[in-house]
Image 1 (cartoon, rainbow, N blue to C red):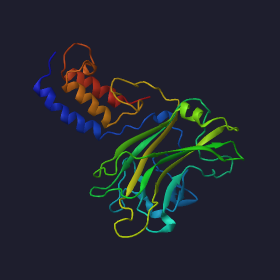
Image 2: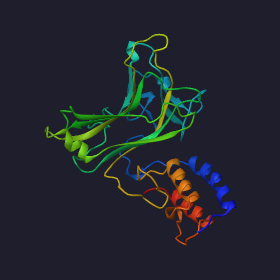
Image 3: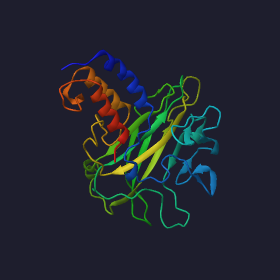
Image 4: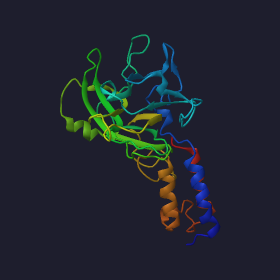
Length: 287
């Protein structure tokens, strides 16, 4: 088995191309309304359709043309800035909002023990900024059938990095059926789930202790019962069903190490044909 120098040097270009490509998980199975925040709420254009807010202003629903704003895809994203006082300790978006006709909430439906639930998406912290003295993440609130709407149980996940150097970073968190079962039997069972990208500051406001750093969210995706295995040859690492630069990095690591997993065409060689096969699978995306 061998790998030639031309192909090896070309992998850097391949990585740059793939890392800049959009790759949202399971788009067809996404249970969220307005997951990329592209559509404004007709009743309140300062906020995205399908989302309610806690302690955010209309200026935090940013447009690609806003000075200094960051948008991953399309023309819109949502920004959560550091808390400045008691009234902004907790800031969030939530899908727990009634639809205009009052028939239902925007919370996605949930089938009890019907498969793992995964929330994924992208976040960005501007270059030179750090999320300090604060908790930033995503919360999933599993709720009972209306008109009850009470929270059956909730799961909270923190974002993996406090700095992203101005780059969009993917995240994915999963609530498994086992985690749900471990909560215990407390009927009635949940039938929907609220999604809350949030930040919270629980400390004292003052010099050296106040929260810092701005965070942007975009291109969220909620799925239940997604495939537990790779969706295609480019889906190298978990969470499966989502293609991102983590898959690119894993492929390049295996490729440079002459690992059999990178021999995608199965000819025993490591060359352009394997890179081409990876590119083709990556571009096809996950179903």
